[in-house]
Image (cartoon, rainbow, N blue to C red; front, side):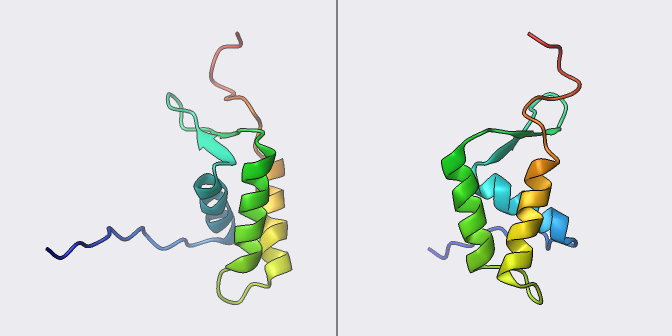
Length: 87
């Protein structure tokens, strides 16, 4: 039986690419109720994201610039959803 993998839509911006790298590494997650990105504060997942960004940057982007974009995106994401009530 021939198995095919569903293609993900192409990433249009460097920021979108960085968000995808962080999600795949498990460094960020999406609030299930509101859709806001949340930092999981997992140092191992962060390192995986930086390693992946340096190892496989988008076409035309240097490994250092890719890692810098991942860092910028990570710094712009909080650890709580702004719409969820505080516990």
